[in-house]
Image 1 (cartoon, helix red, strand yellow):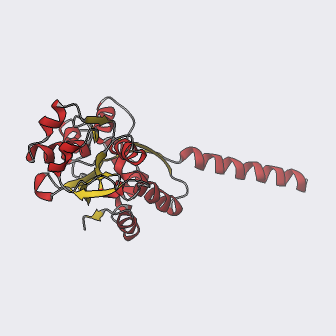
Image 2: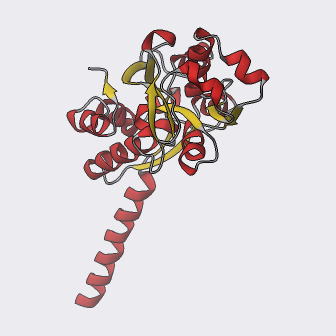
Image 3: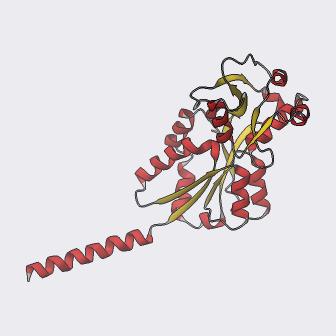
Amino acid sequence: MKKNIKIIGFAVLLSVLTCRNAGAETIYLSVAASMTDAFKEIIAEFSALHPEARLLPNFASSGALAKQIDQGAPADLYVSANPKWMQFLLEREMIAAGTDRIFAYNKLVFIGQASHAIAQLSDLAALQRIAIGSPQSVPAGQYAKQAMDGARIYAVLEQEKKLVIAKDVRQALLYADRGEVDGAFVYKTDALLAVNARILFTVPDELYDRVSYPLGLTPSGAKKETARSLYSFIESQKAVAVLKKFGFEPAL
């Protein structure tokens, strides 16, 4: 009899645990590629406090992610590396009203092998292959184009076919770090991850819009308690410490 009671008790406990897991919310995150490492750690910190949460991140260029969401891809929280793509979703009512806010900043730099004597934008004419994220969808590429337009060199480099288009900023970083190109435009935070390449110069701030990272909840995310908790957690001291660790400037 006691054995039967134990079996029944175990079955009830298993049923309760199964129900809890079944009821756990799955949160879909669409995050700009340049936030990959920082957000993986933020997710880990959040998960330690919310072990029941199931977070599924999708890291890609901001434009590609925004278009995926526009086409119906599941997303509860969106992180962009450019306010433009956040506005794109806001206009389509795919971000919950009042949830979009800038939470971090970054800087644009040019990296390459130490052997290249490159110290400013005008020196790029001497190079043959320059990696840049696609200006059509990659914010880092958009900022780089803006800066090169300001220095009046973009059209020349494009005409001479010296620009190597990357799908996102991390691919541009990889090209430069492997030496497959002479240099690449990436964020300062990405440059810190390079093994072989180094920062050759920092792009002057006045030549491009400030690199700003907005985030926002989608309408589906605004309805999920876990998504709202993560959204609030990104303002916490733990999350701010992670952003600083990876070279971002928190928007306090």
